[in-house]
Image: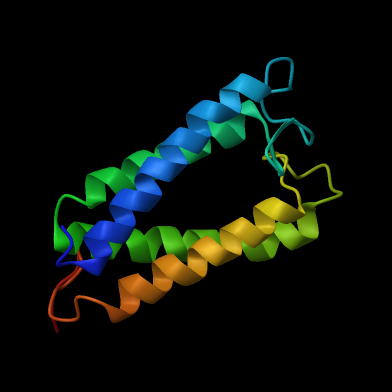
Length: 136
């Protein structure tokens, strides 16, 4: 796995996001499922829906880490989604549309995750075509 930066990053991020998703349930008892406010996990605000999203992303990253092509594809996809979530999250903080109970720390983490996942996904393992795409 260490020979592929994509597999390594996917495995590490997958494990971390799974752990964060599980730990989030310890602080969200009583929080609305998709409420604009939730429990605080370190400096991040989470609600049960946010925890489920973290679990799903963690599982996708771990599953993708099994092959170089899979890791490259999932890193790029999750990175792009996190870039979108990070940017959109900046406008949702004080809005009723904030169904993931995002706060400023969440936005910073999502944008940092996007930069790292996209950076590795798009620049490393260049000879490998991401899973689900065709070589030109």
